Length: 102
Figure 1 (cartoon, helix red, strand yellow):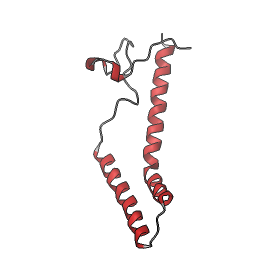
Figure 2 (cartoon, one colour; figure 1 turned 120 degrees about the vertical axis):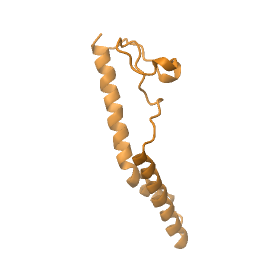
Figure 3 (spheres, one colour; figure 1 turned 180 degrees about the vertical axis):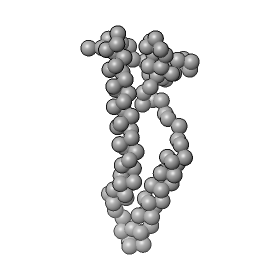
Figure 4 (cartoon, rainbow, N blue to C red; figure 1 turned 60 degrees about the vertical axis):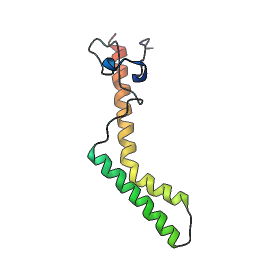
């Protein structure tokens, strides 16, 4: 069991948000929001367009199916979900590495 204290970025001074070499602080967490790059912005626009297109198609057909809109959203964001899971696993591995290096 790792007895290393975990400090989240919201509780750290700004100068300590980055992992320091002495392993006193580990500044990565889900609370640390990553910046949005151009690819992500384009993905967000494509997702909005796809969901709105589905909504317009439903309105034109006199339908209302929120589940179908949710399915369209999930289909277009599946890659983002995979990236988030992979990132989380990397953070978990790094935290485990820090705990075993004590």
